[in-house]
Length: 437
Image (cartoon, rainbow, N blue to C red):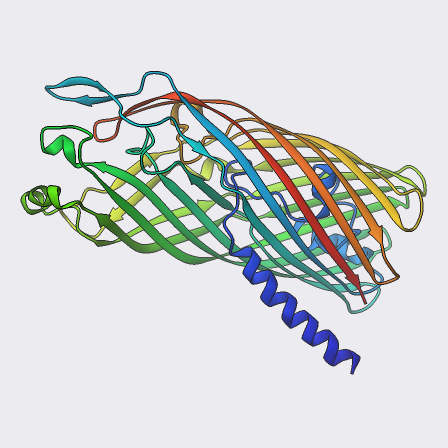
């Protein structure tokens, strides 16, 4: 009876986990989603070494060997971005008409998003553990609207990913554990922008159309981790996660106003067509340290490297030979993230977390765009946990992310020159429900 109940609960949680993971997520360190469990309350400091909840399946499965029983964690986060574009003289360059000021409103993108994850650990023996994670490792949502001043560069951008990650861990020595895992990641993207048909009709910005490009694919990768605990007070966790390449295939759909029909007839362009592109999501490597200063205090640290140089350019291939490819240079850089935190547990029921982190942006000033206008960020995080019973506990966490102002200086013969800056910040409110059995 108990086994049947557990199977039913696991099935339900996997379905819920898949549902919440398909929600688009806010930009975070490029397009990486770092809200992957209650470690957010420590700004993710120490997450690869602590091994005290099931989200370690994502951060470092080698730490699963610290579990004495099986465990399930369901986590969810409300990510509330606030991005405001301020124009610094954008213009529409038309030859031979010269420079024309852009017509439109300055933009605001503040759509709140919910994302979640499911993590589970099964204890097969004191030395062998297996785990499963279903989560959203990368995501993006920006929506500036179709009437804003930079609409010819971008209107709405979405990236949704769902990663399914089984893993196995082995404690081969009293101080050492190792783990390996495999990932199957689904990615779906949607990119929208306005089209200035008025320019071809002799009256720029008077007749706008719109295009939406969509594509999806499955990609595969691997991960591995190591845990070293030389004594009960100290723990060191090392984890690597590989790149995942997605060959996204889909279509480009055009919304063409009636007044622009002569342009379509004359050029053969702006008709619905198949489209494809390839994106390589970055690899990551991280080292975490935990120092258990006593029965109540733990001091945490983490450093993470992310190989964002895999984002070189976005080249969307249009099947319609009359439609030129859409090439967007990225030229992103590899980045570092550093976090420090602490956990205080005054008794068996309550725990309190805090942390701060510096998160380097991969986006160069020369290619920053309204699709992903991020910059260097500083995290301030806190959290609280309560143990309801021997088997159930709940964690709540909050983070505010301060984002450095991002300047945008883009010029295109088709979209014009977008000049301005983005002031932004992010609030994150989340929970994690834990069940040990």
